[in-house]
Length: 236
Image (cartoon, rainbow, N blue to C red; front, side, top):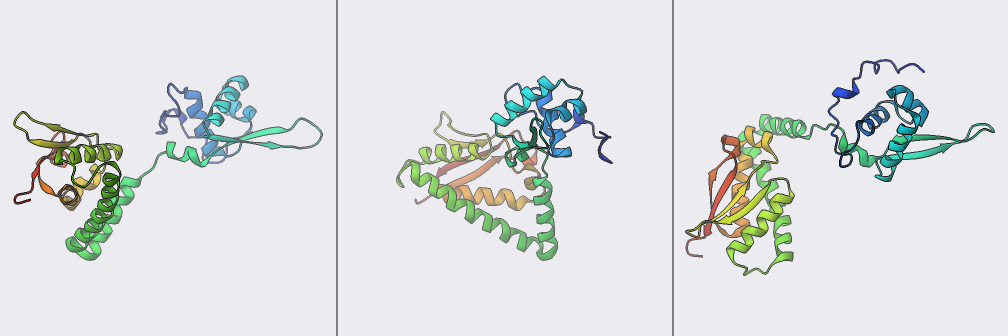
């Protein structure tokens, strides 16, 4: 069977598909997923031929991918012979393939700014801050009482931010200063192009914690982390 027009030049080895299809996943599993993404439902024999692999090896990896819910199997009967099994990727496998959400988000923000300028862009980030604020408040309320010490609130906020990809932690220096540090910026490309995004985060932390929050370091400005010094609000 010849390759579909335009796909013969696809180099599976250079594809950006992550290898995170399982700890120590073989390159054959990766290639099988890519081939199914490109070609659609295929039999183990077809896949083995296209990839230059053994049928046994291809079938073994297909079964592993099926167990991980990354591929599905369909039985197709034709004539009086043995039924044929066709494999295809599942919706769960989609997250393993390249995406460009950063590009989409950056493009949308650029379009918003072009339509309404900085004022509209700031309104968008303010609306997002309110949405995030509602979610974070709900999570904090499930974990602690309203009168919990500031340090406990900061630590729980760090847990929430870490779960969102910010590699966050909280610490207290010898002089008692509380800091929240984010060692990764999960929206780096947005933050680098839109200062309003970082300002919204700063205001979010202050509102959520009911405290004074000062940014001391800033990834988007070239620092290794985003560091916030947090203290009880004056007169609070």
